[in-house]
Length: 467
Ligand code: FAD
Ligand code: SF4
Ligand code: SF4
Image: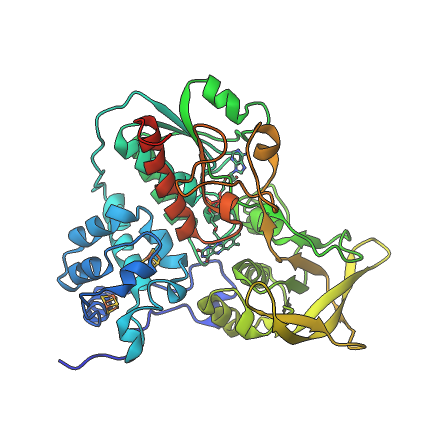
């Protein structure tokens, strides 16, 4: 049989339609499309794809089961290493991980591993909603309580793995909803909240306890958790503190951090105001500063909220943009105007203290910097003004210092990240950490990998194997 060189495309909402709604953009594979894509996998004995995946999913195994239309087996293989495939299948940067090393990439397109992952996960969610839930077996109770601080992908993964080992697990979450960035950061049109909720409901069924609206570091600290009888603690509090450029005018009205903007829209459902309590300003001309996933999400959200012209201002070129290629293409298709090699230098306000213009300067690329990307250098006398009603700053985030400030002896790094050893153990005995709070802003799958590693280290620590 001849090899199909191109990936089987996934149908999507058309740009003209989707930019007016919050529904998901890619629509998923049909059974026929999934089986056809699965036949493209060569079942390589060396399977480099597995090493490309941070949690080492048996990729040829789950794809072979799709090809044979044995979806129960496929999801079972997936769940061995990844309990949130409906999420990772949608948002994982596959093109830089499992797919970049796929052997099929040498003769054509790599196998669409992420799309196939989403296909089986959606199949399983549909079966679950019909009451056909496949609850993984738990080991006998170990009669030990573990506290998980933060309910993002790191905390959720750590919780599932520990409860399956027989521990009593309680999650403490500062917000009123679980899921971390999956819930309040990544917008509905990329990751429907129904999916996140259903995956979390699964944890509930496994017996994980939840304490919402409970930020650790205020009335209760990490050391209080130990006093309350928790044998170990996992800190997965993410990197949610926004960074600003510290340029003149940044305090004007109408300038948001992407974090606040997306949280208002996703968590407080500001796009449904007045049905929901939280309003959000809808600017007609919106500038989004940055070139990562967060910037793309903010720009595409502004468009869906009714902005007529969205500028994405990024100081390097398109090649250096850290956002996923798929998100960049989607943003371009939807009509976001990319102002590349451009950097804001100040905001100008009106008599009411609201932003009305952003002054920018043109940039050129110099030598590579520490990040391996070419350094942007301002071009003299190239300043220009853009009229705007709103700006959203998406230039990165850092860890929130609340836990490190209230936990004695907890060692942190230069940017406030918690320092851990190769087992995810912090400098405080019995306290482990992982995800963005350790790495700085990274990815869902790396956070999940860190949560999984910490769970097995906690188990080894509590059985005396790890000191
Ligand atoms: P988080 O998801 O940040 O979760 C931390 C949780 O801890 C939060 O719920 C927070 O409320 C809670 N918390 C914080 N402090 C406390 C406290 N003191 N007490 C109790 N709870 C606390 N990654 C991808 O792989 N693909 C993408 O497409 C992608 N897009 C993104 C888009 C946006 C807009 C953002 C912001 C991030 C995106 N990421 C993406 C990155 C990814 O979401 C994160 O790397 C990942 O969520 C980190 O997981 P985490 O569990 O470490 O932290
Ligand atoms: Fe690829 Fe991500 Fe799935 Fe791993 S979790 S197989 S990296 S899409
Ligand atoms: Fe299949 Fe690609 Fe993995 Fe080979 S490298 S087993 S073709 S997914």
